[in-house]
Amino acid sequence: MPSSIPNSPAELADATWPEIEAYYDALASEAPTPATAREWLRQWSLLEELVNEASSQSLIAYTGNTADPEAEARYLRFVTEIQPNAEARQTGLAQLLIDTGITDADIAILLREFRTTVSIFRDANVARFAQIEELSAGYQKLAGGLSVELDGQTLTIPQLQPLLESDDRQARERAFRVGADAYLAHRDEVSDLFEKMYALRQEVARESGFADYQAFAFASKHRYDYTADDVARFHDAVAEVVTPAAARVHAHRRNRLGVETVRPWDLAVDPDGLAPLRPFRDVAEFVATSGRIFTALDPELGARFADMARDGLLDLESRPNKAPGGYCTTLHHRKQPFVFMNAVGVSDDVTTLVHEAGHCFHAYLASDRELIWQRGTGSEAAELASMSMELLAAPYFAMPVGYYTPDQARRAQAAHLEDVLLALPHIASVDAFQRWIYTSGEGHDRDARDAAWLRLRSRFEQGIDWTGLDRERTARWYRQLHIFELPFYYIEYGIAQLGALQVWKRSLTDPAGALAGYKAALELGGTQSLPALYAAAGARLIFDADGMRELVGLVEERLETLRGSTVS
Ligand SMILES: [Zn+2]
Image (cartoon, protein in one colour):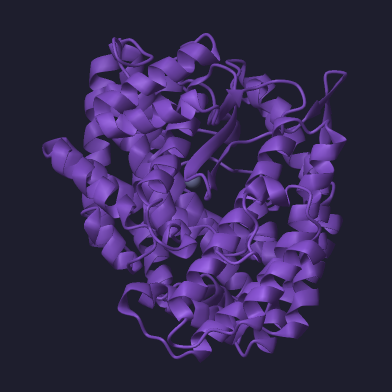
């Protein structure tokens, strides 16, 4: 190994960008030839492993204690200084590799992605992306800082959630209205921010030679295996098949609640008036129970989860100064993943951990691939790993293995399957709305945007009574951070959910085969095309109504069974 590569991620913990840049300079100065390309690529991959893990460690330290100023400074140096600069240098190195003309079949997927990244890169866009980042931070600050006054109390938006779950309908309505009003009061600021982002994104696209930002996004997200027209078919299929099924979920809720129509503030309360599930008392119990579930599903996956617990790679409990949310990050050099979340003992914690564990198993199973780029996949395959795990682990949620009594386990599974049906119309709304924004020619106009959202939303979301609540319904898109911060990152969840339902369907008749296919797909990492990764898992990319109808029918059948045996 040349001395130009550091020995460990720890050596980079306090490195500045100029210090890290020297490593990129060294790689760039020994430009590869066809004969040296593979060894050069291995060295580059090793550098990326080290920088990536140092960056992940800074994220773990900061999110674990946001009150530690040193941890904050390290984290900010990685995200604002090192990562954006490194990305520009990576594009340069990718160009050097392409210039060698190598066409090795085992890295064909990687070479194709490098070619795209290089071909759409423009120096002039670097400053535009930096401006978009600043605007994103502005949105994050605005949305994160919203508060409401209710009954003499000042509450944050997340603090409204328990009120929305209250069995007092008037309390729910008031909580719903103040939550929507908080966003509506900032309509001008939100719109100003969005219009600046919109203009910059369209400029980025044109600079790179695309007609609009949607076309740019498809290229930059490496969507080689489906087109904007396929995604439009996906929207149509959701409207035809899933929207009516989701409306049936709402109708079931209407009957259970005994109300005339389901209003938007009736969606979070338990329809049978049952107390919330309490799956565990403390994190030790949470880890022990989850470990039993993964072991019952598959001893190898159970062993990997036990490794994480043993090696301090699970930071699960909520505590003061921890950042909100949950994530799984990969420590590429030590070849292990890390899970972060804020568990408080509710059923959502179980869903979060099982989901993140799916990402972890993906990281473990792909960790032996030679190059860092071969160990990761796009979000369509990454979310297939996590969403399939949510469904594959569910049969083990009942005691003595899992958290719940048999009745509680059925109730948790029914809630999960209802969420699956309700999520797809939401995904279609968010994606179709962005398609409209960037391709209609009217996306710069705030009134036209709000009108388009209402039109699309009422196409995809039915069975909820929004009478007199058009403004409140509009506020929903102001809350969807992806539209502001991660444009066009959403349809992946829909594609992956339909993939996961196919893995689940197979598991109902052939559990061993479904699990083997799942693990085989994860082991491939990013070495195959998206359709090939799905095929390994026994699934395909679904954009058509017939494909959705079969899976939605199965979900509804299962829901019937679960409800039939729990209704008292
Ligand atoms: Zn995920």
